[in-house]
Length: 486
Ligand code: NAP
Image (cartoon, rainbow, N blue to C red; front, side, top):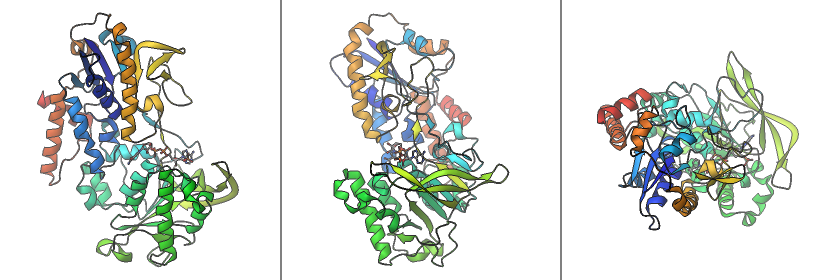
């Protein structure tokens, strides 16, 4: 019997477990999927936006794996904290696969980044996703203008969620306190700002298009910022996603030129930006006309390009009042150079959405430059040599890129390496009961029935509040629900 611990129950962890049990070469594999949280599914539960029901429904596929007879979910097991590092894990399991993701956000490294009101997009996502570590966080949404720095899919998620009405979010599982904040949100303008051009934006086309289809919100693009990008003239030369992105932006710009939409200063209310109203609204596609739904003025999502953040403006007493950007131009090599011209976008909320970053894992080697654990085909390298029984998969292996499905081949490669090593790994004698060993290490695992108890409690909370499932946002509530179920 080969006993494996997979650390992390997000997509990379679950796909690793699946690859390990769904093969014939080593039939006797028992996989224990450990997670720090009492709940499984990682970023599918705590990162995928609540209004992306289809992606969220991937949980059903992951569930099938975690309910496999030779896969055992053990939540509330903090690996890396005292008593349960790599050395202790190796005493309990023949092999350990770290699928711990990229736990923190990248920094901008500019003045003002820490001012009140300047937050990471990942904090915002954690808050509206009811991550228990974010329970003490508050996003009162009293800002009228919000700047989102970065043009990746996380930026699109947070811009879209900010632009949605509370009625739309009420149909999702957002925690009740967050729903209340969205209900009284004063946000009217959301600025999503890229330092490079539209053809280099990291978002995917489906996500971009969705911005143009929001009820009660309109997208504002600036034709002149699009045409500044050399690739805009010849999208055929671009990779497929970038080409399609450019095509969507082009359609919006053309619609705007044809006068189907108003600009941000078109008399429908003050525009908080310093843009003098040169933008052009386009692509709401909702057929509601300029007033949005129910006579409420539409929210505006401004897509801006070639602006590099140089300072978050404001002071410690009154918080953020805007972001200063330097206008950039293409450098001809895929990058940009500064022009020495600056533009301030007023804002009372700044969300930095410039990517995730892996964090060092206690007792494991770490490459600080890439934020990953050094590896060879998934085998952890210690001083350049594969370390017996230690593996990585997912973002901690390859960095925070790709969509959920990217984790499948990544996990498969790691599982193949592990299985190729199996013969040598199983020679070690292990304690009979790994759960008892974890308890001796001071952990109180939440097993699968405990998780089902959390699910049931969230469904009950939803019924009580007249909504669908509503997530429990704090550790106490989650653990109480898990313990009630056993
Ligand atoms: P990302 O895709 O890497 O995008 C990061 C953005 O931040 C880029 O626009 C980048 O610009 C910009 N940026 C980086 N450093 C900057 C700086 N110092 N100043 C200004 N801008 C800066 O990261 P992400 O949005 O966090 O997404 C992470 C991964 O999760 C991606 O693979 C994404 O596709 C995935 N994801 C997918 C979905 C979905 O499928 N619906 C949803 C969410 C996340 P440059 O390009 O110029 O560096």
